[in-house]
Image (cartoon, rainbow, N blue to C red; front, side, top):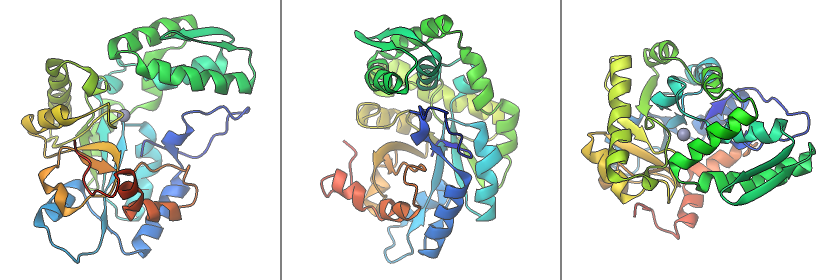
Length: 315
Ligand SMILES: [Zn+2]
């Protein structure tokens, strides 16, 4: 999951990042449903022990993780997790906490939502006339174009265009992301664990080995300094094939992380004991408005289908 907060509807319905948000009511219903279906809620450390033990016939388990360190995780998700006594893990990127890294996907949404005129990125051009139709068309063209830019160019583009549209990128982080004090408070909660999510939220596969290693190592180190506790787990930004691969799995193992998670869709199996730096996940959001979909996703079946029947997808 990413953001957890009550639904706010844009007046014209333009909310292209809405799939990154779940409501507290959805989370509550999903946890109730999974518990009734017999799932145990484990911390990631407990889950790793379970995977390694290779014991069959146990009840299925679920581990909840939230990426990016949104403040609403503490405000809206924590009370729901506490109600269900469910451990959870938040992956934070120090660049967001320091407000020095660009949340480009939200900046692009705001440019398109507020702007009129022409936007160009990576050779793609979109004209905005204020209509919802033009906004969705612009998002459909520009989001992949901006995501496709090399990481440093993408951020340069975001800074330049944000100046043009008077979007305050550091303020966006301060509005949405937990401060160091808030992260420390969350880290002291018995159900919460904090993991690392790189310094600057780059797609690691697109970086040189040295730069990828620095993002992996330094983010954990910085979090350990700030939180004064070990940081043992890592999540790859974006996290799918093309964003993180075998080299990055190796770098996380070399950096000493106990685990690293992707967004390759799937359930975990005992076979993952040898691949704990490329663990699959299931992305959850209110777009599966019915919590019962979560049971289908958790069953592992959609993951098996997308992995052509294989339990492992770690190449
Ligand atoms: Zn992320």
